Image (cartoon, rainbow, N blue to C red; front, side):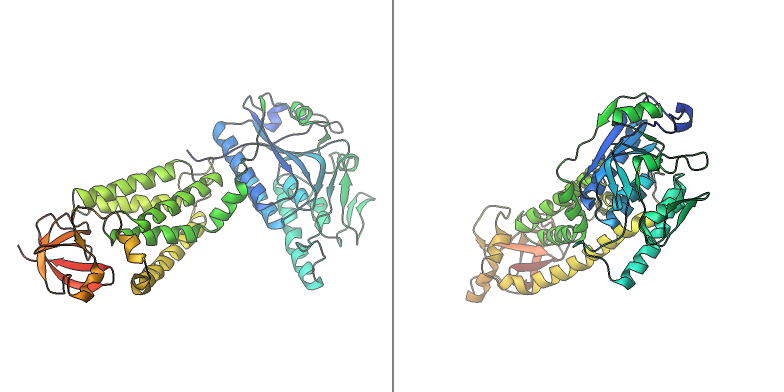
Length: 463
């Protein structure tokens, strides 16, 4: 169950007339309308991606973009076009007044374009985030690259590629017969009436003029019920969580490792669980991870606990649990669409593998720093040791300096199961101890091999 959202809106033609349902793939599934109003942003991309995935999964007959934007982030628009190209659901844009700049590119990413009676599309010159013009050298590079991108998006969806290029490249001249559509040194902008004008037996760009989404849907011949998607309000939050995925993984992995090295359940374990919870929640909201990814993660954790609590040293449950945990984390970051094959191609795994690699490397460094420096910080040992298992007057490791605690080489027995942390009894003393990854049962003979800050490390002795 991968999570997604909605669909997209459509417009109806006056100039060229409605297209038969057989040609547009009209069906009885729902027509999903996705509003794209205001500045084009990464949050809007997350919203659209979830809508497209939901529409594909639920068998929608069409996705229609209700567009009213003067533009925004070009990289977000590129991602939207890519997402539109990944679904087999018919896609339509209805321009509700404005499709400027990045909005024009998104419209070209859909199969059909309709325009309201008073509307415009075009003028996609790249500018800085502040609104100022780019430096000349950067402008040439940007225009050169995105001119081709606009053309390819238009060609893939059956739009006039010359018109698309003229939206962003003012050096592009466009003619239809002897009629000049766009002169050199002028960015192309089309009104609704210009966009639907005849150009050699077909509309110049838009297939028709529609006063409303409902009118557009009717003109396309779709019979399904119109439903309107709405953003959840968490898209911006989801964007930041997915962008910071390596950080949350790093903290989660490091916390889990430190928890295994300390008695009971304490601060590292709580921090680890919260980090993984934020990680999966953010990717769920972003339309990446469905409920199956965190479910596999929890199953993996349960198998690891079974290994530690009931079958220490068996390995089988630990290996399967580890594989499920790693697999669920990677799968949560894969951008997979319902119409794609179950196993995404290698390109879809690049970002997840990179994020996991960065997280593992960072976690290793963090654990080394914690082991080296943090034990000397005031209160740190107390926080890690709170909630230790087994009742009784434990001797804190720091008491070794007064001669009241255990010393290296001293022998005793495991008072509680060591998995790998627990309690050890040395004569009359009950001490928090931890093995070096070995699991020992109650009563196992042990010997102190190292006292490192808050840790008393023991090893097993022959029975």
